Length: 203
Image (cartoon, rainbow, N blue to C red):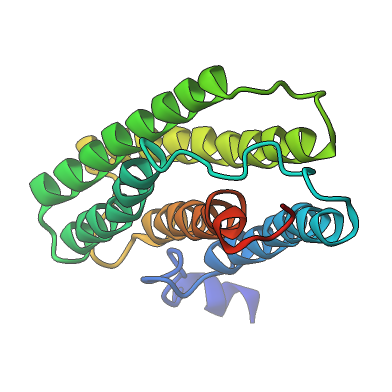
């Protein structure tokens, strides 16, 4: 029986095709746990804002520049990285390299502007619980941006080395999914810390 099996081997699995693989869902589960952590941080903001006396928010009118253009830049990067992924799906390596490279540049600019915003804030980390939450939440998001930039750099390098194909691209799909997560989380962070004060929350 064993000799017969060795004499006539069957087709061996060579890996997942497209997004159909445990790796993709593993990243999705990682994203779910990270989303929960952001949920706890944002809940802390809303809980404190609802229970603290007026004046708790140290910046009742947050500056919309450069926060709004920076937000638009980050959200636009999701479209660019999606375009890069479509390049892999279609077998157009040049398109994929452009998509991943431009997205990396957009993410790096976002990170630099965020650091600039930290530097010009009129309060420090330990001013009160609002400032601590602001810096903790945005720094936690920055850590995810940096992780996303590392992923994008890896995708760019591996694409340049022609590691991917329309069938073998689960790593690309998982990396792109992570970058979309980074962008979506920022929408909630931006809404919380930049928009709700204008609605009178916590002031």
